[in-house]
Length: 294
Length: 345
Image (tube, rainbow over all chains, first blue to last red; front, side, top):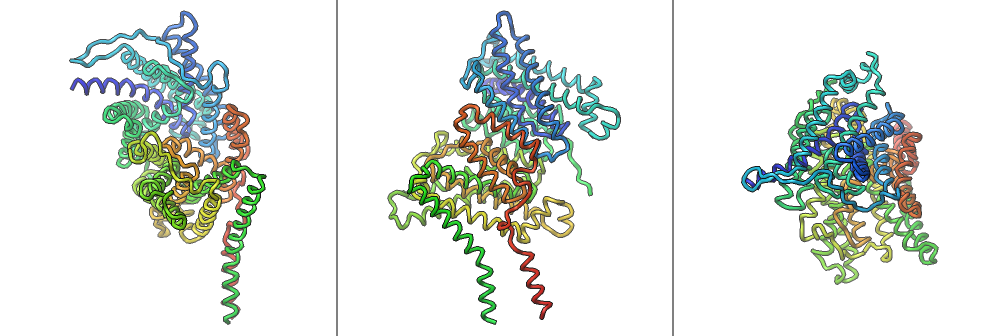
């Protein structure tokens, strides 16, 4: 029981990070139906931004986090402007290949930047490490608490934006029907830019929280972190915001439990769950079923 | 009467004999250049890997280009082929102790096992996952590839996470492996060409163009989609089997989804939907990536940029939907002449 609880805590800690990253995938997919392969690499860029920001004396957790959210967000808007926007209206697969190209570019660019390079780096301890007994031998530490609180805060801000602001309403309209939204006077391009901005900001935050938990960063961390978060988004039903959170948590918990069973199983377990879910609910846990009409 | 039949036979088989002769001449030319030390084993090996990539991309073209499905897990099939064939030559037989006359047979058997095992997995993945469509199918195939990879890590008999060394390099560049690779490459091209222009291929195209309409016309779309998956998997599996016996070492991480996206990039850079596109895309990008090696760390950065620029300015790929004439069977001409024969009588 205590062991179970302890694993559950680890699972949630990982799950909230997946949820943050999955949110960006699901938003971008929801609005332009693109699997944004470059999204995972923005996670890496976020982690590195925080790494360098924390070297400046006096910069603590919150400023580092904000910097790590801002840079990927700006970059993401730039990528959308330069690489994805000219392809709008083209077959979706060309956009997908473009996304793969952007992702290859982003993964390899830091390798040649002299002060980054391909080496692993240990992430600074931005949060003081403390442990609190919870139940029996199960303990919860300060990083886990930070992760959960920070993600909850960011996710609720994001949901608030989508639900209650004008841009949020524009976002929902564009994802519902792009042409109709444009006819109603919504600036579609701007709305898409905002979506990329918010999604990438969350990805950057996810990168920082991940590096706090597992304080070892390298330029390829975004590849598999992104893949797993993407699986989480699909698991929850891509395009659905609560789905991304649910999928992320599920993915984190499954992975931790599977790893506890057998260390090599962790990576594949999430995919197995995904395929099982998709076989019975092809639209994901909380996705809207698509109706085929003639 | 008899003479006419004989003529028709020659006419029917002449292109095939011509292609076979061309392949043999190509092989002899490369072999000669290698003997003359114009081509180092390094170049020959690049050529071999290029051909293997062509095989996988051709299979992917059948799934993505012809049938209109969306698979991004092709590396999983390659892994199944590589591992199962390696299991035959290392675990089942002691390949190097076999008499030299038996070795080609065992090797052929190993490649067949690789292709067959991949085909079985193609069925296993194709059959249930056709419930999901489009992007979801993509994710299922991606997930499938990654599951294969973690399963291999789980199986200690084939080395688990350490990889499997000591596979006989029977198709290695020094052992005349180019002949084997060329043989299987030609077989793949020949088979796929005939498949695509058969009624089955037409049915696959109808799935791509409009699934609903195809079903209304009585095409069993599920059958053809699963068939496309199986054929695509078999070609990938055979390529994997060859790859294992060229390098002599395989590791689960060689077959990650990054490898799958490589094939996807080959196909879409070359031009999706045509076999020429698949061949030219895979071959040229394999070679270009090797040429760019002198750029060291800049290589993949430039590759990424080129990919984006190409999608912006040449979105239909290098071949842009055109097919080499020899890859289109002369169906129309045959139909016309037979019709003329009928009416002429």
